[in-house]
Amino acid sequence: MNIDICKVIELPKIADPRGNLTFVEGGDHIPFDIQRVYYLYDVPGGAERGGHAHKALQQLIIAMSGSFDVVLDDGKDKKRIHLNRSYNGLYVCPMIWRELDNFSSGSVCMVLASNKYAEDDYYRDYAQFMRARWQV
Image: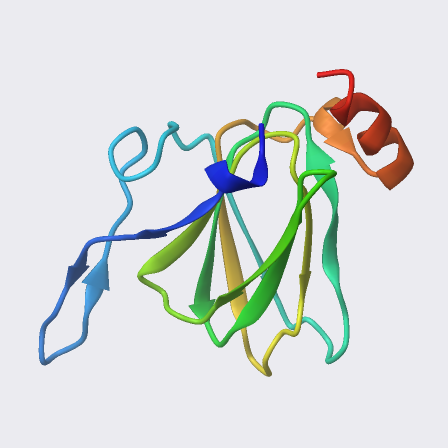
């Protein structure tokens, strides 16, 4: 997998004067069925999250409130994506190292995942990720 597969997906937005509505349907708006949802919040100023890659897991990362940056690294190229709209999600394919930083005050990051939590799906050491990356 390379970094070009990771992209921002614009989700459906139903505009209404009473408030907008956005929805996500697994296998339709995103290329996987949703098996798990989690969210990050109350991230202290200057803190970073992520710092890992997944062997098989696919994710959609959404800034539900506020903003933050996602730095993607495929072992060759890096790119930084700024998320700040709740109707945009960043699709992250397997074997991409990710780091989240630059969280605004009160931001909420929601992640839709293709699999349930499994510790053995993680690369938490960058050198180990790089060795595995170039064996793929």
